[in-house]
Image (cartoon, rainbow, N blue to C red; front, side):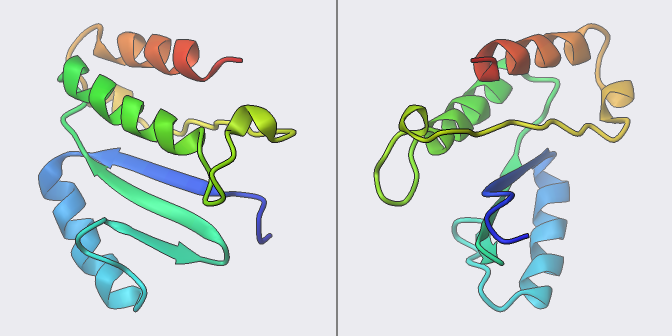
Length: 115
């Protein structure tokens, strides 16, 4: 499946990201703790520490992700590439957020990545 999934981002609380990073560092020798990213089968995976109840912090992380998605390693923009897609998986996370936050996050994702 090399090349089918170019990038994966996981957003979670800072303490959870730190724990996951430690586990992943032991599992993958190419992990770089400073960047929280590693490559496996040509895909890039990033852990992003953010409290999803803080919408301004979520916006900051989404800005960062959107910038990365619009630029690949050769410097071409995603709009110059033929196809790219964004898939969001929440795994019941929205149930644990403050009231109204889940809908706000979904609206932000939809407006940013719909093109």
